[in-house]
Image (cartoon, rainbow, N blue to C red; front, side):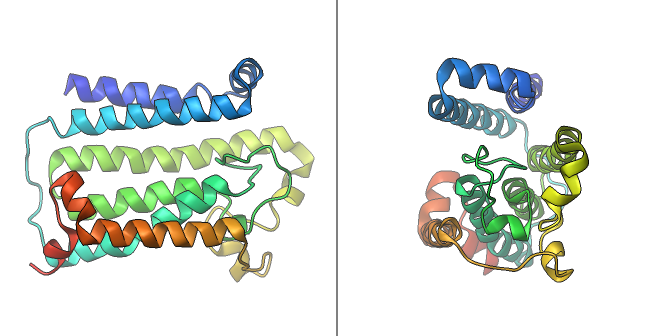
Length: 228
């Protein structure tokens, strides 16, 4: 348990400290934007892998029995999560997590939600939380999902302070809740290159995971669970 707490604390620090504008700007100035993003991404992946390793080293304690419908929740939610993660990371988005955050004009995915990457983590965590009814999985995926939600709240507050009087104008064509701006007529659903790439990547990865990739990596076959 101590190792899991330590690993998650490191993960939180890696995603909280660089989010402070002064620290991020200083790191970008020293390393350059591309090297900073590459280094930060690799360290974040390593930290996340450590969190997973520490979580699954804990004793298994079942909280609810597995059922086929739970697997279908994951099968339905994870492809959407992958799409949001990929499209969000490669789309210009000055108001949330993105490899192209410095660009002013937002990508088409921002009309769906201005926090596509964080919503991707929420959906991914939710799908895995439902299908894994043991204490360690609830701790792992629950904590990651909550962290993503808190990330949205913190990002909104930070951007509101940064933009001041221009906040309303900058956010009028987007929303925190997915599709809320489109439903209210403040934004139009469209398709651009990052969204097409996101659709293609999520489709390919999903097919690979269902065809045996997930079983090879995690010793769990989603389709077998769904048909059990």
